[in-house]
Length: 107
Length: 311
Image (tube, rainbow over the protein chains, first blue to last red):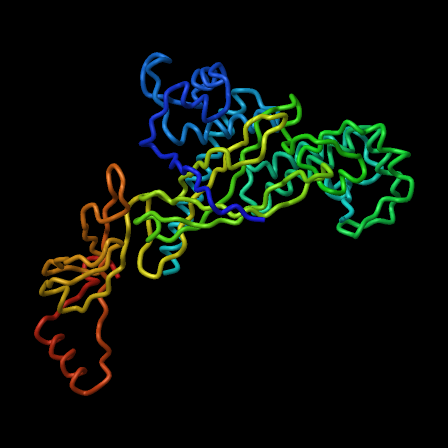
């Protein structure tokens, strides 16, 4: 059985994507209180001073879903989530860098 | 249906205490968590580990599972012993399958419910699915459509969870970069109790390209040139993802020199550049005339590239 017909809307989650607090809550399927807590913890860093002015980017949505999943599955608290996400992103960046260096070296 | 050795999955003895089981589970849950692990089958392993723990943490379920005996091996074709349903299933009749295996459904009974392992609060939204997508640099440059095959769980008429292969057309947006995520709304796991589906997140990986490689939106090309092109300068047509472009090689270029073609990289705000790395290749001195020419060069332009480098 295959469904071939509908092409779902693909959204690139990059830095140019601009999401308000309610946009992010809707896409992330979470209450805005959770987002506010994650901003206070420094996991999400929106542009703008006040919640009604906040602008989130694409990677913030990836970070938000990651935070929700970690909280649910590993029973992490907010500081634990913040630390895990920072370390995971650092690990991703290092892996990418290592891959570039290796590619260069074995040319 | 395949037998699942829950003890083996958690890496514990059949005699393990509840504490040992819990510790083994916690460790594996961290190791295979799809948001943490880079292992290919992390998501599958994570579900397996959750299923195993779900059974072994519960004294009643563990006891029922142990009744199957020790003669079964992981992955072996399994049929429940005669009379199993009436003996055991009643007690577990209200089980929410939570993305668990056919084996689990057979042993512990089934009832329409969700797949998500987000069962703690009878969540309504389906789970998010994560997958990688390998695309060519040309697809990233031009955008395009791709057909993906996804294995997703589905409940059939008998309330059993089955893996179901689904074809999905994915629009590759123009200018997508390596490592970025593409979100496909509502293409994740189905929701429970009329809740919405989760989303599908695709993480982009670039397929190796014979000419180019990418760093963010910038594209790199290594360009072999002759010693006289490097020394005297020239104009050459070089490939970019958008087609051939005329490039000036300045006189006096050396190997490793980096030249830039502005905004010829992947499109975006701002677009990337294409960088050309020059590599001088020398012709082989494979006949008398060529050897004579090299000797003449050595006489007319004495040159020591190692001078001042302490070599």
